Length: 144
Image 1 (spheres, rainbow, N blue to C red):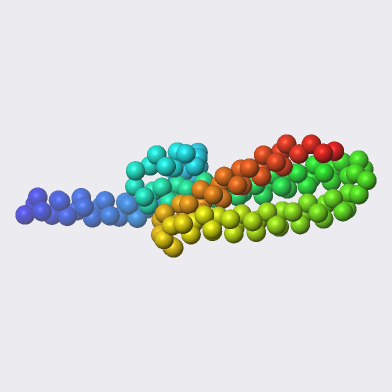
Image 2 (image 1 turned 135 degrees about the vertical axis):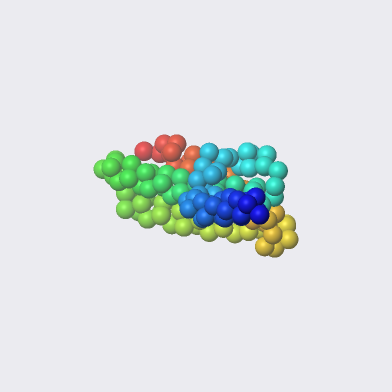
């Protein structure tokens, strides 16, 4: 009887302590992951979570790169013949790029069965790659 009570207390304490453990987001778990490293994970759910975290991080980096690009250009606006036109065109180009990424990656994902892990993995893989490509463009823009 004492063994049963002790076991019950031990199990109950584990339940209580697990509730006190702070939640860790997938983004935090996979913060150093890449598209390639996500595919090295064995469970499909984990691949999907990893790829989602990579895509979200890539999107943040993309938006930050655009912000830095805009700020660099604004700081050098005296060197532009038509800064306002350039700035507006760059903003429109970003909107078109955002729409392109969304539609292109959906088209890629539709090769898989809709709303499955494979679908979301394909979509997020595509987004991560395209956002990284555009980050490179913004960081290396040289037409000044």
